[in-house]
Amino acid sequence: MAGGLGVPGGVVVVHAVEGGIVESVVEDRGLYDAVREYARLAMEKWDVRRSDFLVLRDRRRLSPDEVDVRSVAGMEGVEVGRDGYVYVTVFLVSYDNSFIEGEGGRVEDYVDRAVYIIAPNVGEDFRDFLEVEAAEITAPRSPPKGVREA
Image (cartoon, rainbow, N blue to C red; front, side, top):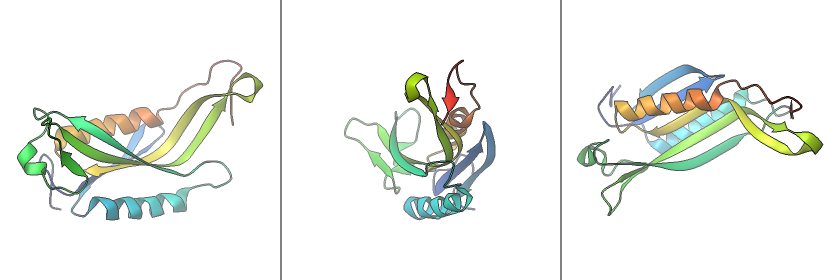
């Protein structure tokens, strides 16, 4: 597997379910191909009667102190800004989620129970960050009294 721990290259894929990391791998492939494949895999696990299916794209801004700019420049999904910061495209595929309703059916919160996070592998620290983020996103939460899951 090219782009091993600590060495930028390929993509990192983190799969989290209910606060636990099920899988965290680095694959030697393109970002957009990986997103499509893991979205298909997640769709097979998706219960259409119970949950929404979401693919969200976001960006994380990393300082030159956090990542070796020369080693990540030109990677798919990575942009080095004129400001010297590195902008990394991150995809979240959520296939087990729900809204939390409050009084009068008003949406109070949104809960992800199972997600894939896919991003360019810009280094081990960023991978660690994504693992923490995935665990926090999917961590079980108790709804406040009088609030129910929809």
